[in-house]
Amino acid sequence: MSSNAPTLDVAAEDPVGCLVHKLRVRDEVTDAEADILRNAAARVEDVPLGRTLVAAGQKLDQSMLIVSGFVARYKDLSNGQRQITDIHVAGDFTDLHGFLLKRLEHNVGTLAPTRIAFVPHERLTRISEEQPHLLRMLWLSTLIDSAIQRERMLSVGRRSAVARIAHLMCELYTRLSLVNEVDGLSFALPITQIDIADVAGLTSVHVNRMLRELRDRGLVTFRNALVEIHDLAGLEKLADFDRSYLFLESEPR
Image 1 (spheres, rainbow, N blue to C red):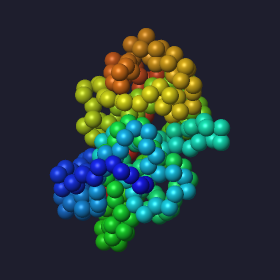
Image 2: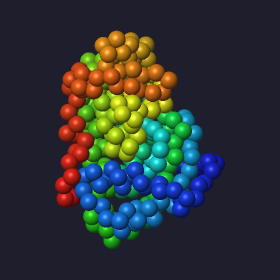
Image 3: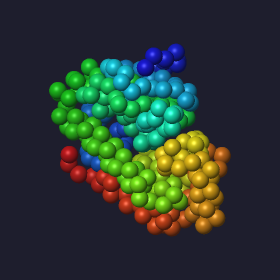
Image 4: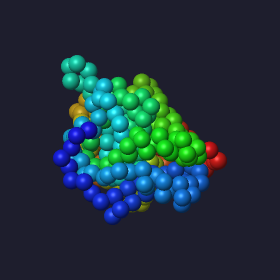
């Protein structure tokens, strides 16, 4: 990615704090290992809404870690229709598998103003050679990404329209809870109904109707870029949400 976005001083913040916190939910990560991850970030940039971070087929020599914001992984048809296969949040690598593939067959772009930490592949190579436990933890992250995408396929293929959106809200609430991005049962979601439609495989008009149904059932409200869950148990029941696919248990890896 070439960008004229301002480069920030990595030392002035903790660009991998959310990643470390998320990994520590699933296994012990030592302070020394956390420092290695911090030192892997070469620079941090603020990237505006609507920016393509990675284009399909683009040669890659770095991977991107979300410090804050929302990023979509998506594919386009020749007629311009888009399918979002995943939404990434703080603490997620958007293209860690590009470290080995060297290019992606899909696009990655921002859904909101986003802060990104860039990790050169040469530094990931050093981690893979010298830090086997960290290598396994990063591998775990890519496996969980795959599990999330399989759940998304199930939603688009088999869940009802209202259950698809309910499931997305449950999942985002759970994932954002891991990185302290929720306030009680509320969280910021600065994306559009068109974005939700492209995740759920629906039209934006249909999404609007389903959001209204969820509100009328007293389950959740999505207004002014804020999701407010009123009945989490009811929302999870409607969505048939089982968080086991997020692998939240702590185990030696």
